[in-house]
Image 1 (tube, one colour):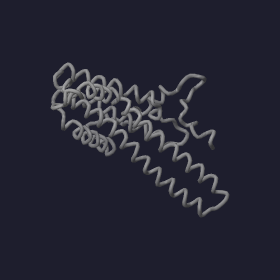
Image 2 (image 1 turned 90 degrees about the vertical axis):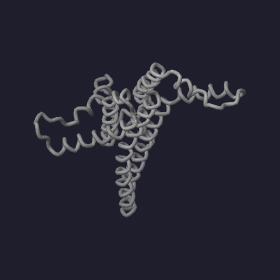
Image 3 (image 1 turned 180 degrees about the horizontal axis):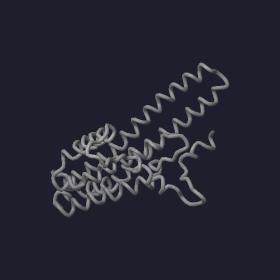
Image 4 (image 1 turned 180 degrees about the vertical axis):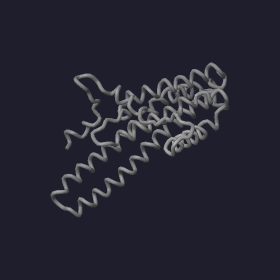
Length: 226
């Protein structure tokens, strides 16, 4: 059990070639589309959820920030579907890889920061030095604010990676304990199996919440720079 604990986090290969790219491209295929004038209930529910999420995230943005709406909605759908697919048995979750999460966080953060420096450079520079700061503390505060700005994409990526990885590890441990106890004590097995079901429901909620939190924080960074 200890040897296979992190096996599900190893990037899969097909004939020696990395299959992570195919897995990343797979979730968009699960989003149903309709060519008819009247949609079915599934597509109607999907469009309602997308409009509701987009409205909540874009309500605080001005016209320039609202141009990112398509990107942010696509981001939350991609992360949510990827996290949910990772809960299936013998599947791989790309969002458990810190490198992939950094590849999503850094360009979005950099785009928002660059937009802020281009559109309102005075307000962007004002964040490095709060008003009323004592003169001796100015160099230290500038360094601290600069570090806090540069660490934002790392915080985004680590938060998503840690939450998804921790849930997968806990499910693996409890599932292994359920399998081991099945030949020893049946009542204990039923109790552990019930805990596993409750944990699975919690992980489904965590998968959706983490997708929303990641996208919401990107939206807040965008709001601060537009």
